[in-house]
Amino acid sequence: MLELGPDVICRAQENDMAAFEEIYRHYAGMVYRVALRMTRRVEDAEEVTQEVFVAVHRHLKTFEGNAQLKTWIYRIAVNCSLNALKKGKRNPEVAWDDGLDPEDPHQGVRDTIEKEDREAKISSLLESLNMDQKMCLVLRAQEGLSYDQIARALNVNINTVRSRIKRARETLLASGKV
Image 1: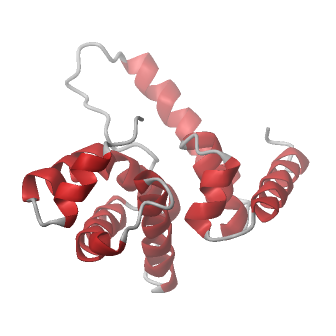
Image 2 (image 1 turned 45 degrees about the vertical axis):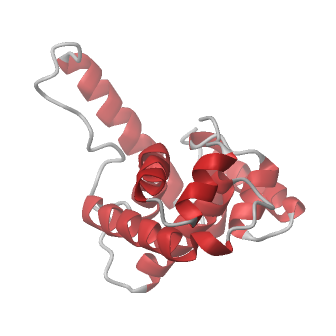
């Protein structure tokens, strides 16, 4: 995903709603995926996504450009997801992708079953990790962030990110399911 230009960010900081909508359209899918992977519930992911963009709108004027906007938004998404989980009303019950369209003629039954099976296995594997490891692994393996971007998004040292990912991989390998 390419970063938006500084002109869009500047316009959004000056309350240009069209520019903010462009930011929303550009990053909403990413925020939703992170929230869904963290909370594992569609309703919670939708709520977190909404909270994230309310926070982005509210605090965009404080964004100084020291990091990429994407990294800044990731950090907000992770924090909002963690806050949602801490509220204690979470009962994981969703596959990772509720975006399957059964009417899509290009997606056969076999593909759907294979994808659901793969998503269930991933979900099961991630459940064996602690939250810190899970966050780092999701941001690295599924969202494609660099170690540096993860460190900034989680506000931790890059060596902490490396250590968490290493331990996550060791845990997954030790589980014998990988």
